[in-house]
Length: 291
Image 1 (spheres, rainbow, N blue to C red):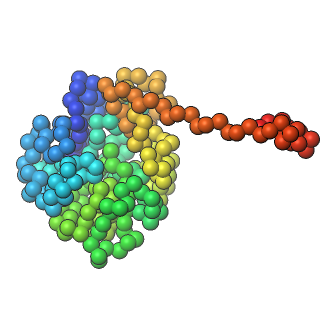
Image 2: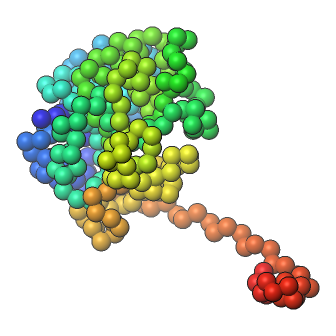
Image 3: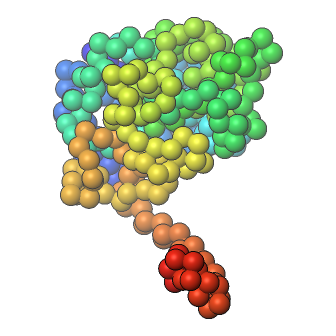
């Protein structure tokens, strides 16, 4: 059995139904708790956090306050505090806009015997992505080997109790700063803990899972194209319109119900057409009349 935290900024009927689908399909495998935190600070409507965040991640909470709130990059303060009192050795963290085109039990059962301390997506050495969007804020204490610096994408992830306790101790050092999708995997690798990608094509995905579960483009700022990206979002969950999802047993992100779809990007400008003499010259040379 594992713990599960379903993190949401809204609590509409559709999001509740999505949560209930996850909870019902994984009963006896993951023990879920809904965490409704509507604002940009760590003040959830449910549940009450005990112990409070200032006892779990005090330095990261100070950084969050300087940052102006959870977004961008300080969701670890919320999820670590919410996960801290839970009873099982592993905790899944799932944001409300993650969806799966299959039975959720199939997904979580495949990792039930996995002993990784961190399971997530899009794990990549930071050196391989020097243009990562949050690179400028990604700092570590001087003794940390640069080869340990990582980035990830964490709308769905799983942490071990061992990682949570080591992380809380390590990030008391104010030398650790930046987006938690950098700090969390970097701390784990620095401490020699086991990190794995759940699927995809990256270097931390075991061969038997390579090319499964999700797709994206790690070096693109929005991770596009792929199924597990930053933008654009879908407006309906798989359970509501399965015909709109192209592949079974696949993770999708983001799905944001009750939010208007973003307009499509404008089409690229047409390529300039070559002059008629140039086109005639191409025709004579046997290259056709195309522009």
